Length: 254
Image (cartoon, rainbow, N blue to C red; front, side, top):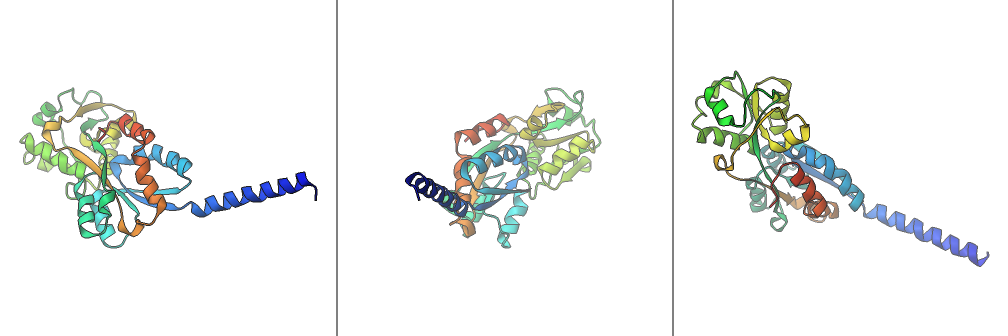
């Protein structure tokens, strides 16, 4: 065999070995992601896969239900919660890796209606006048955005007043969908959903003094402590490209 042909053969074998080794190293990470972060993950997922070579599977839902499922052995590798309390609970119980926990975003609550004439910049006045039949919130028992919506109404002295008008969504994703469909005149949603949806309608960004900061924490689930794809995802969420997406969608950065 000629020397050029031998060189090409060796180069081909080396390239094939590199491709095979890369495929062997590529792994999958299954992330349980709070529904408010859906739009961000739509952008982050392909970028992460391209940079890391790993495969990301995203499951959306409420933070409370995810924790219950993890406690029952659900095969999640990473939790991106809508609060800090539930990842802390997993860390304390041994189901999450304590050193991996960090705040990836700080959420913003908004009162929203797809009707641009529904209310002005002062959503509190709209709520106090009670000129609506239904008001959507996410279930406060399992959805952090629902919990802060309840706290906002309590701070305004309206929680007991509007009880017969409240419609609960299972999570903030369902709360947004119900409001967008016209099932209620207005609803408490994540500001990120309004920005991602491209339909500002009537939007009141709830003042921070009406509810505690929505620190959204991520944590590595203990079962995945040796999964490089899971660790890579958490690292990517701290990267400038991911943080740019998070900020663009209305979250405050930690």
